[in-house]
Structure formats: structure tokens, C-alpha cells
Length: 135
Image 1 (tube, rainbow, N blue to C red):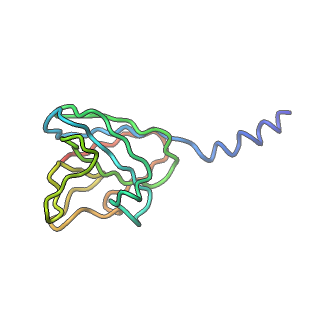
Image 2 (image 1 turned 60 degrees about the horizontal axis):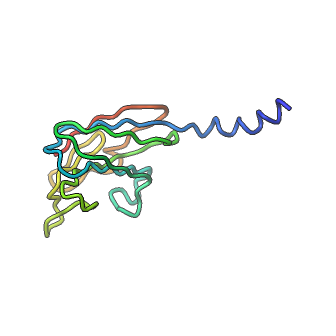
């Protein structure tokens, strides 16, 4: 009987689920919400239809924290923005330049566009905390 139980538990060990605590600094106001998109591959990075997981929480001036749960071990990149008007999208001007503050894991906006998945990527192998700054 013990061996049968082990056969059911063993596959679950390989799929450990992790908790990622995200600290977002540089939040200009408590208006709206802070939204985070989690990507797990470079193809489709920063495309809405390629988001692996997303979450949002009420914005808190200066620093906002949120937790993303049930992430398996793997490589991820985060894109975060301050959805100040609460319309659930990143507002941009006619050139596509963001009008709302944005931030990325391990990288900043480049002079001529956003960073790549590789610039933002980090390896998650257990519960972790990541800090990023809105620009």
C-alpha cells in the first residue's frame, strides 16, 4: 500500500509550485492598480496573448507588493505597469510609447524600445522575491 501511495506522490515532487513575491518601487500614486504579466518564453514576450500568468493589486504610493503563487520551476520574465486609470491596459501615445509607468524584471526600458525576454529573465527554483522599479 505504501508503494502505491509513493507512485502518486512522486510525480508531484517534479512539479513543485513556487511563490514569487514582487515588490514594485517608484509607484507615483495610489490611483488605479499595479498589473504584472509573467512570461515563460521569449517568443511573444510583451504580447498580451502570450502572457503565462497575470495579476494585479491596488496601487500603493511609493511601494506596492503582490504575490504570484503556483509557479513551477522555470525561467520567467516580468513586465509591470501602473494602470493609473484602471482600464486594464497599458495606455500609449500614437507612437506606441507608454503613457503609464512601466518596469521589468532585471532590466529597464531601452532608448529605442523595451528590453528583450533574455534581458529580463530570471530562474525560479523555489519561493523567491524580486524587486523592480517603475520608470
